[in-house]
Length: 108
Image 1 (cartoon, one colour):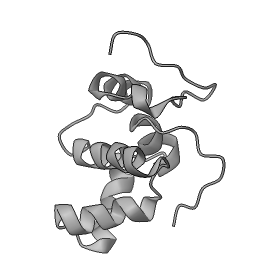
Image 2 (image 1 turned 180 degrees about the vertical axis):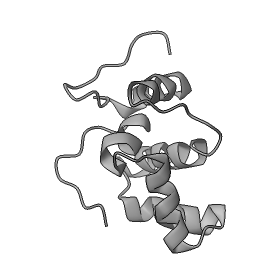
Image 3 (image 1 turned 45 degrees about the horizontal axis):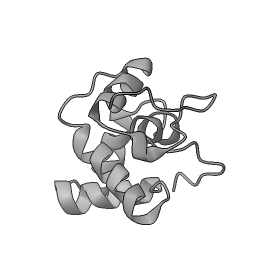
Image 4 (image 1 turned 90 degrees about the vertical axis):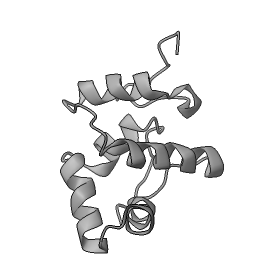
């Protein structure tokens, strides 16, 4: 990506289509996270979900992805997600995956 993506006041992307790996790394660095290979399946799933549905996936969709596609037990999937993003799904995972800031959210 050549140009800096447009972001809102809290740092979320205004247009998720501006997201790419370099944007994710920069957003993660702002959150104090260095993206290792463990992060990419989650971030790519979230972005692909947005591309298909035009809405950020709820945390339960990401947990289901980890269970079905990454062979996690359901309890361990949620723990894994919150270990990677300790300040919260919306605050960190959604932002780093290039989502717009949600107006209201179920962390279900």
